[in-house]
Length: 186
Image (cartoon, rainbow, N blue to C red):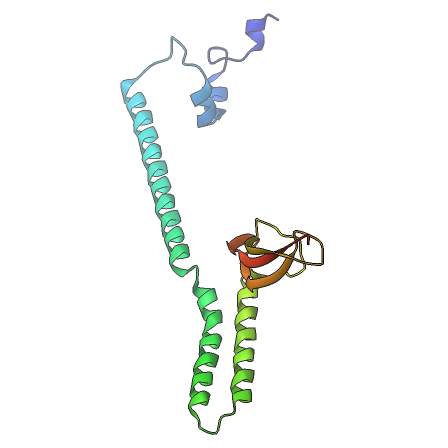
């Protein structure tokens, strides 16, 4: 057999084989020169393709709008869980203020309530990935610490000996550096 007779083409196929081919296969077959190019058939095929393109375009437009709506809702309500978790802290602070107005309230009870509120607040912050940077005794790290002063100290040099203000990380990203005093050799 010759190469040409081995390869199927539209000229060598019977009419039944041609009808068995799917539309996709027919679209991939090259148009034979002797095929009847009826303008009505071509117009129908063109209209089908135009409708398909319109459906795909509409589907893509709907998808784009849905994604935009989802992004907008995510932006609007991103802090909803965080705010919901802070409401007990607000409630606790309000109760502390009310308790301090009572003339029989002891300073010790108000301090105890304030400490409980602070612990509740810190737990809420940690739940959302906020961690304090309190580096006493650690080696000075300029990525997380801001040196306020350098003082002679009996320990190793370039270590934090005092923290003036804690720093905070949000999921390992620095929000605020810790303000520290750093040691130097005497």
